Length: 193
Image (cartoon, rainbow, N blue to C red; front, side):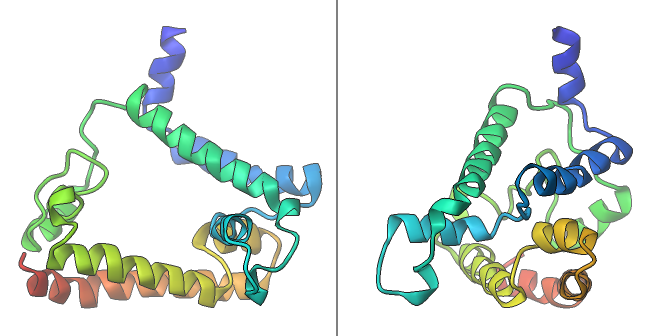
């Protein structure tokens, strides 16, 4: 049992993790003709918790209960992984990436997210406004505008040969590259890095 826990704690290679993620698509299709995606769960939760006369939330959300259970499982799995079986080793970040991030003022590489940005101390600061509020709004807006999130389009949509999912995934990537290389240095300077 101890060997299994140690195996789970280690980062899995792409050739193991990738196929496992990819196999969710046929599994969902075969088990119930369901589509994989995370962002739609927020709509289902809002429709369940805040029934109102808003047409967007007036549909049979009970049919999508599996999606809410799936997201709950993701949250519980993340909690269990973080608290009980987290890998104590430092996150491996390429030296070139460390140099680029250090030039922007980010030097903590021990966690998945840099402490210079993602702390409660930054929540009500200019950094928090940009990275939590504006960033969160942009992710939510982009997800709604694209008709789904990166997992829904890139994993489910492309594997179903959906042209809009290919276009959305290409623009997700282009937006990420543009943000990283063109906008992020200016934002970091503006918020005080």
